[in-house]
Length: 116
Length: 113
Image (cartoon, rainbow over all chains, first blue to last red):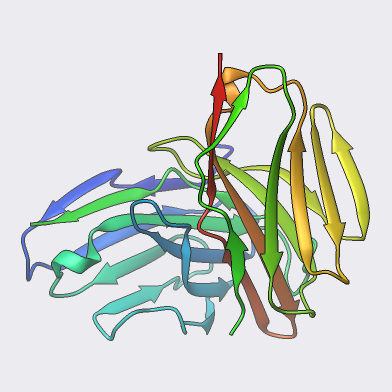
């Protein structure tokens, strides 16, 4: 496909369950970003990868959040022991080149997580 | 602390008029500036990017950047009902291994038919 894809599109979890959210970036895009968007808010940065290296995870809200991109392509965001405050849309974005401010980010459709 | 500020709106504009959306940012080292449009329930869609001071026009859209005032704006001419959406201002810093985009909370725009 030509764009960023994410799965699942919707996820309902009971409080305390673990969830895994997948992102397939645009082929050839080196940079991959995860964002959390609460209702009525702008996307909040979570973490960032250059290829397989996680260069910035300063936005992860707690140690229950973990992200990986082992082969430098597909990425997974895992949330352990989900809480109601984790309910949000999780957006993945990819960007072509490294260490350049002139490359645009392209977003996937997002995963809407609802924790009951 | 890097911040991006936008008026949350809603901003109501009659169809055919010019919609003006504004954004300020806190860090003078900011390098790239983007406007995203987000329809309800959808992901952000990039509509404009601007990197240097001045105006950049693309169809009905004009982005304006003033780095001295740390201000970026988006003008939409001949507003259409389909322009009704939330507009997100985003500012990017990329230096060395650091690469981050900070988003504003968005301005809701409503075009009145």
